[in-house]
Structure formats: C-alpha cells, structure tokens
Length: 206
Image (cartoon, rainbow, N blue to C red):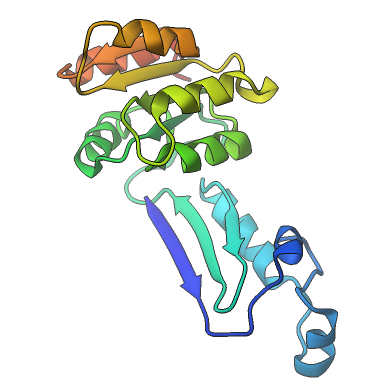
C-alpha cells in the first residue's frame, strides 16, 4: 500500500476552509486565483485518481505549512475489481499488518489499514468497510472504545467486527463482545484460522 504526504511552507489554510479543498472549483482563498491563476481542480482530480486505485481519499491539515494526505493506494501484482469487499484492519504493529497483507493478497478482498483507534474510526466512517479487524490494544483510542463508537453509528452498527488481542486475560472476550464485537480472536493464532473466520462472516466474491 502507498500513502502520499505532501507539505509546503505556505501561509496556511483556515480551518473552516478545509472541508472545501477537495471540491471541484474550490480554493482556500478566491483572491489567489486572480493573483496567481488556477482553477481549483487540482486537489479534486488528485482525490479521484486515488479513489480509482482503491485509496480512501484525502484529508488536509490547517495552519501554516499545510499537510495533505493521499491514500492508501493499492499497488503491485494483480488487480481487484473496485467492487471487491473491503476489510479495514486497525493495528499499530507493522509486523502484524504485513502478515495480514500477505494473507489477503491471495484473496479478492480489498484491504484498508489504520494504525490507531482514532484514525480507524475516521476511515470506517469514510469508507464503510464490509468487515473490520480491530486490535484491542491500540494507541489514542483503544480497540474496545473504537468498537463501541462504531456500533453507535448507523453506518457501522451492523458491520462485522473481529476483535484481536495479544494479551488474552480473563474477561477480555466478554469486554469485546459487550462493546459490540462480532467475534474474538486471541493471539497466537494461525493465518488459516483468521482467514476462515473472515470468510465465515464475509464470503469472498468469486
């Protein structure tokens, strides 16, 4: 997966204008077009390219030296239909993410990733994945709290969520299920076990 980060040293973008930046024919300041030119199409076109390649869109940061995020974008061997069922994996451990990447690259599923609970909630809201793999021990917002938050929102209230934990303690599974997890998996487990559980909740497109 590729993720692009672009920053500059400009005067910045007012927070109230952030939401309009990826809209066609919109600029942060209309006077800029008169002084420097431009049509307000650059970011909206870029966003469309990202989404065409399986990415989840774009966002920007306000303040001096704005920062833009584009992606993640799938790349590499093979292609998947854009209608492929989507799995969001929320996991802060890079090794674990790579294991799941390798596991799912041989399937028809499309994989999205987040590295903490807060960004996972944001991506789930934007992308509405068909299934979520939720690590329980996450930075910023825990997997339990992220699950509870998503269960409280209509768009993700029925989305299958598999809670995954490295440190299975007595009562952990019940806590995850009380928060709204559909299934629970404690490490260590085999990739075959995980894939079997995913397929039982979200059959592959053939």
